[in-house]
Picture 1 (cartoon, rainbow, N blue to C red):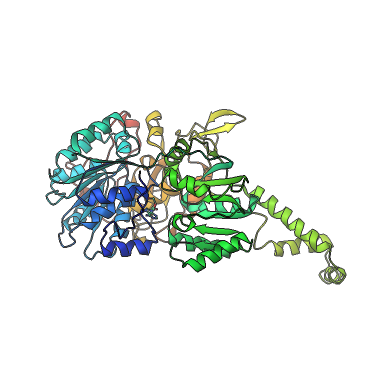
Picture 2 (spheres, rainbow, N blue to C red):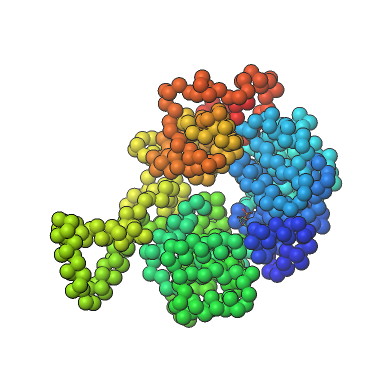
Length: 609
Ligand code: AMP
């Protein structure tokens, strides 16, 4: 991809969109955005090869929103996405980009959500609908989703939709879209069937792919840490404590996260400063100078601001947010390993960004090795040894007065010096405790998801009770394909309709916080005070402990196995009686079709109506 240096304004986006981008702290278009915005605004079809992390949502949402007619209450953009989480995420992105567009509505629709709710939301005439293929097709068949005013259709993560068995549904939707509407197809990979769909339905498309510039990176030790968004800060702080760091640059995506992270690190006692494009030249130069002279240890930077930065003292580059393409990666990590020194580059990746990691490895012909978040024990050891060093320095000074004070305190409190020393240590360590809680997340240090290394041998992951193997991976469609026998277990969570919760919130929280792909989330029933949810049997204990504390709509989930306890149906009935739902014409929902035996597959979530 060519390096297009135009700003969002120069790309011709409307004032409303520019304002929203400014609110979000986006400084410049990502490469995929620079390449897609022109052709999509010009009404062309595009075929984009890009994965999560490249900014692809903005790449189609921004140019398509530019031509949305806010006064027309009818679907003008339809996005098909493989999963409910992605549909919700994409809808949220549309919502945030369009926040200054008066009268704008976006609606995510997916199987498992109340049909009744969807019908009334569709009647309001959202300009953008983002849905999973099966549910979109159901609504089109019922005539509740009409595409007469459709300007553009986007297939997002087409290869994932294919894997999930949605190909026929996609074909069906494509055949029913207005002939003069635009089509954009995004896919991380281009399997034969996707190429076929592309050839058949795209008209003279512009091909776009993210950069694969081959550049090698030597003298830099490259690592990656797999961590959820939620745990990134804690993981970063631990890495900072354990690594022998000199100057550090931490890369983030937006100006807002730059400022936020700098504040959080400052609050934790790190001499750090933001470095972003909105700071004036003088302020930027001052920050860089301070880093050079050792007055600052950490700069938290955006790509724009760190351009051309050359500071010998930088021993570490941390990619807190994954870069948009391999070119940006090479550029970022090139800030370390300068002047013949060795450097270390640490990349934080979420599960969904693992594919991007592989792309970067291929493009840079280098291996990025896995690295574990330092354990609480390692951090504690480090803190203790640092404390020891500080004490050693203090011992070198004059301590006569303090020795007398110790004797007096021991006498006054009737304790011995050991106890006094322990109590004082307790006070001293309160800011940086020597006993840390574990990060509640499954760490995978192996490159093969779902396998642990055991003295070099690989063994299948087991559940916390040492029982039968868990699904190969909670996080991939492949996992279920190979494991058609996933047993489900019913859980109760202490959040219900009265808290304003919806199925989408619950699926989103569980999928993200427990790293469970939505296909492993079974039936969900909302009640006033609680919700029942079916999840794979044998969930690791640490995942459950973490989930218990996760808050949705301001309330901790407090998840527990339902067991034999009478289910709330008696005391806490769903608001609408079950027979309210016409069984006969119940929509099929978004049930992926394919190679899995039906009776053994976890049931798809279904909101009780
Ligand atoms: P995506 O690849 O669409 O999933 O986007 C990944 C992340 O990048 C999201 O958190 C976006 O908010 C963020 N993002 C997208 N475009 C930009 C941009 N131009 N500048 C900064 N962040 C962006």
